[in-house]
Each structure stands twice: as C-alpha cells, then as structure tokens.
Image (cartoon, rainbow, N blue to C red; front, top):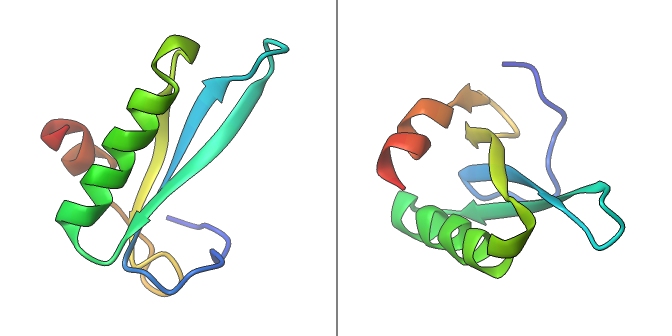
Length: 78
C-alpha cells in the first residue's frame, strides 16, 4: 500500500473520516505503538465523533517503512 510518511514513529496509524460542523469531511488520526493502544485510540476518536458519522478509511502497520494495510484486521477487532 502506498502512503505518505506520517509525522510520528509509532507502529500503527489510522485515518478516521467524519463530518465537521459545515457538513464537509474532516480527518482525525489514531496511532499507537501497541495494537491495544492503537485500538483504544481509534475507539476514543469514534466515541468523540459518534454524532458525525465517523468511519475508518485507512489503517496501516509500520506506516513510515513497510506500510502494511491492516484495515480488515482493525475492522474485525473493533
């Protein structure tokens, strides 16, 4: 999966899309060094934007190097 480098050196990265107040789409990102921390960060964001139709649009393991798509795994765990 081709992706740009992210601004952190953590092992997991996700992009979560949601509607902002002006009905445009905005992005939030979740990150973590362990799968547990990563899933908790995703959960926190989904709860924070629950009234704005949040959805995970990308989930990557080792985003700055191997960039392995783990979207299916993440969706099956949340």
